[in-house]
Image 1: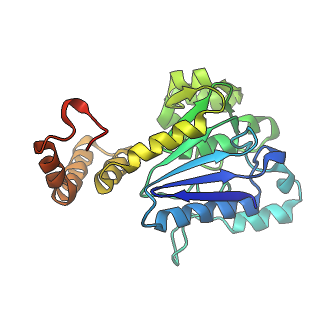
Image 2: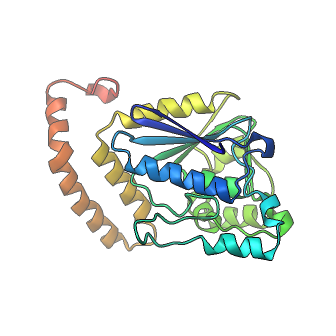
Length: 267
């Protein structure tokens, strides 16, 4: 079993289970990881997912051993990848879910190396919690293997064009404290605490009205590259529907005395 799934109420934990290769992803693992997130997306009870790795590593990228099998093996794998959500099939990326546009948030619990394709997988997550000894890096720079799972797209959007270019071209190691400083992660915790912290955050997100949370998340993701007027119009049109569905009930709870003074626990 290369991927395990733990469903507890509204939170689904998906774990890469290949510790012998630092959770490197081969084609079978990519398919299993992709399927895990397809199931999460279609699970009506699931609201937030946490992605992590076993054995002290998040993900060392794509399993280069499977690429070393020859041109035919590589070509056969590449032919299975696609961008379109055709015939009910969600897009499949080399690392699995990296071309999927989910409607629900995913939190990465980065408990060790998240390098090459593993870094791309981490950047695909909405939020990243890193342990103090964890690190990222475009380590595939050494082997002539390009970024293919969104790294050249997501990294500039997270940290800016110039900084992203430097990290991509040099392939250097980026420790957790630098990741936090440049916006490549949102929180750094003590070693061994990334999963617990991510699960706590997931529970908090899952407690909020789901339609509003998903709508604001999607609006934030899709505003990239849009003219301001169009982005504002889309935000407004979307918000009107959400106010009707959840906002009015939320206002009524506020009037009844809940959630005063910025309180998030009793809402």
